[in-house]
Length: 283
Image (tube, rainbow, N blue to C red; front, side, top):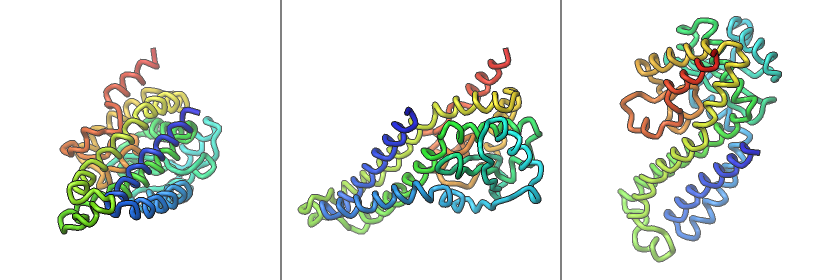
């Protein structure tokens, strides 16, 4: 029930931002167009958001022959968690990280980067995979995938609004039709991406703690995940993932570089707090 309410909240708020941009671009006519676009986008994000996110990171599917150790770890943990076997993908990046996506446990995907396979020992990798499987079991993956898709569109529309304001689209004739004019476009281009990130942050942070605890119990070793998180936090600072901020909430640790302004809107709780909670589970 909690996740269902969060999904409705997420769709409502992010869709509202899209409608607001439509209103500013074209007044009442723009609002109608944006409403139709939002309906289509919500439908598409439910069915295809996993494919969109995987395509963003050029992830390729792997099986037992290509990644035998990874496959067997996932297979063993899914049996413990009583979940269907997800599809496995590898992201061609040296930045260590992982995420899960899909609309439900029957259509789930676990993706890891090449970097994480190179630096993790077996216990740490088991902890990370168990964390991602917990997102699947707790049905967080649909929320995360929809958020990434809608936030990505908002980022794109905000960028269009910025250029529209620069070139004078939306002047007085738009104001007469109910649009917001150049000032409205400028404000929307700044505020819409920030609002989208804040919504993602509010939705996802509490789910990370739950996934850590559930994953630690599934793997049977909280210290493996704790060690893995510490290693990921250090390594991702050195080699940040060349990704997109609207998908940051999907990863097990924040993939953005330490110098990014968007770290202020981190969708993840501090790694130190997550590690402390995991170590407390051993006492």
